[in-house]
Structure formats: structure tokens, C-alpha cells
Length: 624
Image 1 (cartoon, rainbow, N blue to C red):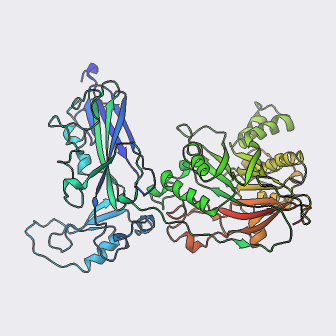
Image 2 (tube, rainbow, N blue to C red):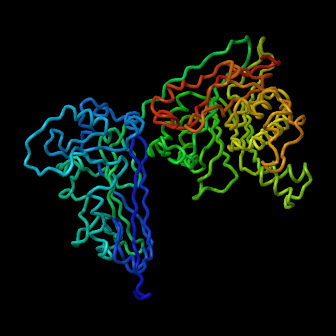
């Protein structure tokens, strides 16, 4: 091939997650070109075509269609014949199978019957009988399989750029300003999916044209109750920005639309032995909500891709938080773009105000793909007085230059900075009661403010010394902050500490010191430079209690529950001289956590962590 006659392969990728009632579904669509060499010009792939130029700047238009009602499973005993709950359609509920099956034996009474999984097919096969048929027998009676989440079908095969049209060059021209629908001007151009005379295909059989109904031309679509139990069809078309010409188009179908996830089970609170007196009460929660950038199938292979999607999990998470009726909410692993686009607006509508602090590292890919901490308070309960953030990278810089007197560019200084700079952050707010407590005989000097700290410490299990360093410096910062505002400012420290109750972090928080022989203090040279002071100097003046240990007598068995790790990482600490823990919600039993999944996240619990809930009371005069 002459170098001047370069050819390009155009590709259009289109994917949508499984639709669920009330959860936004968004097309994952992009078009790209690949320069071909001599060997590539003689072949092509589905959803591609060969042209003389690379793809121009383009934009997409979309059309959504609702399909006919279908029978999801031919086995009469299958619960999925009448239920479209996500609990019944997860990989866990289907016995690990992500495939639907269709009987292809023409001599069976089950011919062309579709089953949601292999188990239902086996059960139905026991009731089948032989029938006479003029249809040629297939080579095998083994049922054909369709993998759940596979959206390619006959409609998709007819898309522009399919094998039949791969060498057709540029598709038919649509002048700028014409309606964005697929033209049918040439033999190589696919049929117009939106044309009622040509619609009606379903993998479950032929249906009349009226059964595929156009429902939207917006990019995003939120399924509602009328969509449940049906499939949706998405038609995406790429147009040249300059000329308006149709470049490529593609059509995909979704899996059956699932119904809204059932409401989370109510978590009862266990009440501690109450004491007389005391001031205002408030409910506080802490929750690591699992950022989308970490919710991958590589990390959670037991979870369906659709239940890991943020649009599905967000609806469950916000409902779980709001249903608890908290006054203060501490969240970790809040993705920056999701705070702006989802979380803040939803919490504001629920009556909260909030602040956000993202980690100090660069985004993972596109802007906003970095997580951080968010802290909310109910507007009718509290007013914000002060708000600050703590960057542990900045504290590390101060430690190296001011405390240790090292040049950060020296070998030793750079090594310590490199070890300590893990981008973790903490939030600090002072909230004042909107309805302030008045002096009384039992509470002569009422306290009307509370200080809340929210943090997420370094996650690497092999670096306990870094977590201990972060905890020590967080406590030192809080000492300075609280002392500057009087010694009677109540304090709570909440978050994901990535440390178990056996760790030095836990000892420091609960006992104000760490034993010199603790293994977390003596990590050895293999962990890099020593970053900790002498063990006798690892101390603080806060008198702190753990909410769950105080109320329930011990920490939970776990606050993080995955296949790789099951243990306690999350805590709520409080200053015992001016706060009292009134109640705590026990973590659900393991049998409840695994009811709808082998581990978390699942269709019931949309994070791999479990929310902690407590009722607190402000007390004065050193009352406990």
C-alpha cells in the first residue's frame, strides 16, 4: 500500500450497566480510530469500518426504547418469575452463574424455553416430555447460554460499522440540522431501529411493532416502575461536529430492569446504663462508603459488576444514611466528583450542610477521581462555627524541616518525606447547637458546642508505623486546637483508622500511650527509615473512650467484611470528661451480612464497611 493512501479502522464501543429502578444509567460510549498497515486492510471487526481518514470530532445522540414484557424463566418454581428484586438476580442468588440458557432440543416440550440459570433448567428438564416436530433436530440438545450483561444481539449486529458494512466507507450523509435518527438510504446502511415498521425484535421471540416504545432521547435515563421486568434498548449515533454527518451507530440491549432494592433492615440501638443529668443529645454515624475508583471486580470478584456501579450503590447508601436519622455524619472514601454531583445535593435535600476534603494526591485519571472525607450536620440541630482540614503530607514536611531540622532534599530528609507522604487527610469542625441548652439545677454550666474530627488513615497493612505516626500527629493537632478554645470543648474523633484493636494505634487512642515492646513501634530497618519518636514520647493528654466498647463492652467482630479481610477498622472516639455514649447499633450478625452475598459489598450492603451509629450526650462538670 502506498504510504499516501493510509487507511484507518473506526471503532464504536457502547456499553450500559444493568438497569435498576431509580438508578441513573449512563451510556459508556466512545469512538476511536486505528491506523492500519497492509495486513489489517483485508479484515475488519464488528462495530468497526475502514475509512481513508481518522475519525473527525464527533458527538453522540441517544434514543432509549422500552421492550415488551418477557418471561424471565420458564421453570414454574423459580422465584425470579415474579420477583425482580436485585437480591434475587445477583450472581450470589443465581448460584454463581451469570448465564441464561435456552433449550434447543426440537423434540422437547421445553424447546425455545429460556431459563435464568442452569439450576432452573435442570429442575425443569425433569418435567419435560418428547414432542413430535418437523423442525430439523439441532446437533445437540445442550441449552445455549447467554451471559448476563452481554448486550450484543441482532440489532447490534446491524449497526453501522458491522461486518456487513465495514468496507462501505463513510455512511450516508445527513445534512446538519436534520433530526438525529438513523437514515436508511443505502444497502449497507442498517435499518432504522426507531422505525415502527422495523422494530420488534426480541431474543425471546418476535413481537408486534408496538411493543418496543421510544421513551427518551436524553443521554441519561432513570428507569421507573413501568420498566421493571422489561429490557431497554439503547441506540447511540456518532455525528460529525462540523458537518452533522452520521459516522457510526450502534444498538445494544440491556438485561431485564430490576426493581428498587428493598429498604435496609432497621438496626436497633443498644442503650447504655444512663446517668442523671446531662445536656443536649445528638446522633452521629461514621461510614466508609467505598469510592468508585476502588470498587472493581478485581478487588471484589464475588460481586456483580452492576452492583459495584456507583449509580446503584449511591441510592442504597444515601437511603441507609438518611433512614438512621443522624445529626452528624462522618464519611470516608467519598470521591470528589461524586461529592459534587451526587452526595452534597442529596444530603442538602435531606436537611444537611457539609464540608469536604479530598486527599492531596493527583486524581486517578480524569478530574475528580480521587477520594476524601466528607462531614455533614443537620441544619436544624447545629450551626457551623469553625472548619479546618489537616493534611498529613504538610505535617510530614513540618516534621522533617522544623522538628528534625533536616533538608527535605537531603537523602535522609527525602527518605522520611517519601515514607510519610501518603496523601491522607482529616477534617475538623466546631458545631454549635441551634437550640442551646439553658442552665438548670442539674446542669449549671451547659456546653453548647462540640468538636468533630473525621479522618481516614493510610491503608497499607504492612505500614503500622505510618498509621501510628498519623494518629500521634492528629492527636497533637487536636490538643492544640482544643486547648486554644478552653479545656471543656467536647471532642469526637471518627473514621476509618485501618487499624485493629490489637494495634498500637488503638492503644494510643484508648490508653494515651503505647508499650515500648509493641511490634508496631519496632518495625525494623526493612520498613525504611525510622519515623517514630521514642516510645515513651508517643503519648497525648486526651481522655478518650471508644463508643462501641463503652456501650457494648467490646468492639464489634468486624466493621469491614470482605473475602480478603474481616475485622474492625472503624471507630468513634469521644472525650469522656464531657461526652457520654448513650447507645450504639451493633454490627449485624455474619449470617445477615452474607444473606445476599458471600461478602460485602452486596445488593443489601453497598459498601465493604458497615456504618457505625451512636447516640451521644453532652455533659458538664466532669460527669461521665
